[in-house]
Image (cartoon, rainbow, N blue to C red; front, side, top):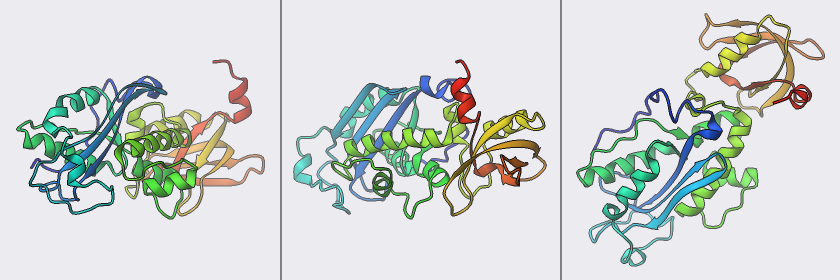
Length: 285
């Protein structure tokens, strides 16, 4: 078994530093026989490779885990009898690697998917690692206030239809829709900016801090989206007067409009900084 994935800082360049609409994204979901990657096996996989809104390639298949696999869960409804004629992971391994090559891997609760993928490749004697990835569970916990941030609960909250919960193909379809909604809330320029979203780490996205610094003291009106702890996000027009980068996390100081109420915001909870809606609509591309 390889060491557990750590989700390291992505390497510079493509795909992490491309404009998000241009970056290849690989949405992944697996179904497994259980939750122990040392003994449990992948029994279904779906990978959808997308650039912008367009799907470039995809793979969706059941996977035969072999005769010795022990099923520790039936949440997916898959039984050994349904997998007899399915290909072994070895038969789809090259296709999986091709879909993930040069792309940003995205999953919900991604640590599990990455861990099981790496374990399956290790069983083949192929030490494949996926050192960096995006987790929509983390992104959703930062951007959305919800009682549960499971994929099923978020689909219900956001009005994303479910066809076959806990099946890889439908989970990836929901994952793609969820990701698109989170991108609207977080307004990232690149996948790297999304990688910097952290929960409970008091880590401010460098891109957000840079935007705030660029606006500080200019009297330029900004449209700030902020999510206080345990509350829904709120958006408001503001003038940023100062950014305290000497604090951890940095603090964004200024006053809201039109009432000029003063604010002191934790930069790690700032979801987005943009021009006010009216000005953004009138600004030529």
